[in-house]
Amino acid sequence: MTTTEKLYEALKGLPEPVIDELLDFAEFLRVRKLREHPKAGNELLIELQGGLENSTNFADAPLLIQKRLRDEWN
Image (tube, rainbow, N blue to C red):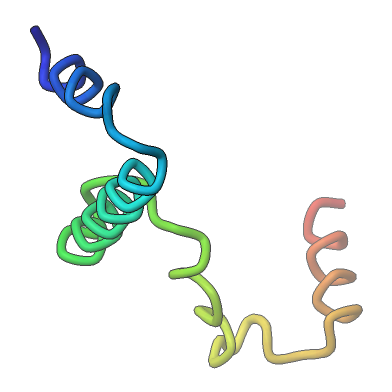
């Protein structure tokens, strides 16, 4: 029996509030692991928020940036 199957069996008889609490804890562990080892899995989009505010490439007006990007492909 795999660990996933064992976990499912353990959860089957628990009340819904307890399962919700365990799900919250599992999500906490997943996020903590991502923060400790950011290259180990997919990054959360929220962790990428604000990553370009100091970029020189994106310092201009949004329409000007769009125009430059379009022109680059022509």
